[in-house]
Image (cartoon, rainbow, N blue to C red; front, side, top):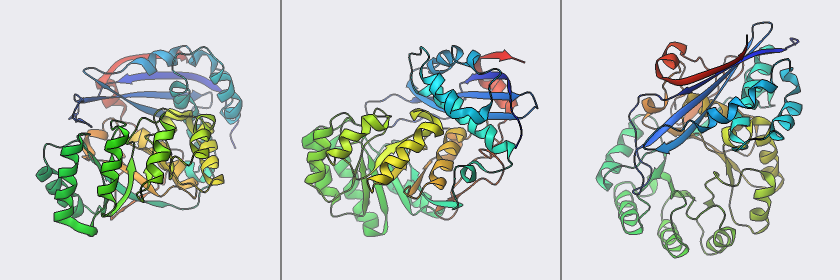
Length: 372
């Protein structure tokens, strides 16, 4: 085990030039910003992490701005003290807790795993090296487009699909009718409603899904409507999941668990405070007999962080594979892709991904450095 001391940290706020999509009818095209952090130790070892944030009309630079006030606290610290560093970071003045702290924590865990030459999921205690995958679609223009896209995905080895839909009850029901006619029970799928339905609409679509091969209905209501989720879950046989974007700590999730609001918890390592925080959420879910279905929508560093946590816990069932692939693979030369229905663990130490720093420089909006 190497004795590590942090010497410098480099921050890159990156706006990749990729094809953009919508995730609901009332959305504009989504700009996905990649905020990258590289931490370097005195012995030359580097830890890297990246968070994907989403916005309309322009790139979101807020996480990078929030990180600038945290990075000076890192120099001279030992990454093996990541728990202590996490507590310190969470107590700093910051307007965006815990997203900026997530990036720091993930980079520290990447460093620790590299220092002992282990893939990160192994350092986290995981033993399985693959997990089932589902294709997570953008919003398409028509039911026929979805049918064609599903056929293409099946040819690419997917057997499970999650639909981002219009979030308009009439249009969404028409899509489900088309999917039912074309694929019947042969297609396992999820539906993501981006927290945009009311309770009446959520009951109606859940009723339609009961006769289909639906694995779960995701985010039909705002995550904070715990009583609405509990009422919906009591009235349907379809598994109900939250979005996982708002309730980001065990304390915030506990009331929903007590109300039996969900059939699984949902979160994102890059939003919830990194591995140090997300592991406590995984333990909470496991203690209550619930799966923890992690988000992976975003660029490869975001996918990789969530994949390693999935592989390290027993109660994650699926990896979320954003498609089309290429819109989420910018600035990384080792993309994560589904192979015959599964995603496999990276074999290299740490997160196991290689950043294309030339491409990062090409698309960087601004950068910042301390130390070095």
